[in-house]
Image (cartoon, rainbow, N blue to C red; front, side):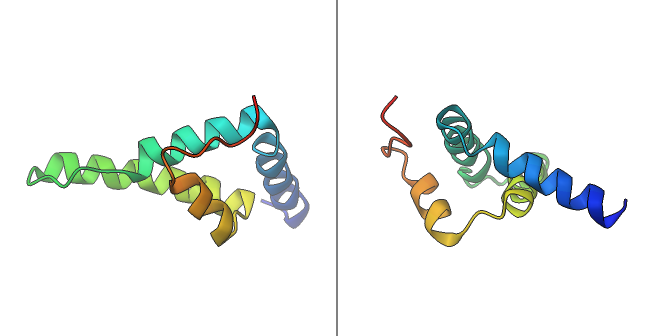
Length: 82
């Protein structure tokens, strides 16, 4: 992938999650993908790791900062007024 295409893709991710609805979806994905109940089942553990990996991809491509991640981690936090 060219540098220009990589930049365009990162910009697309950032723009997608910059809107109010995008922030709400991002919040939902964070809670769904990152909150795992510990399990002794190795298959469930690997599946949970896969979900976390998808969210980390979104995080990296959107360049989410620590403050945004902290905000997303609060299950009671609304992401906008809508």
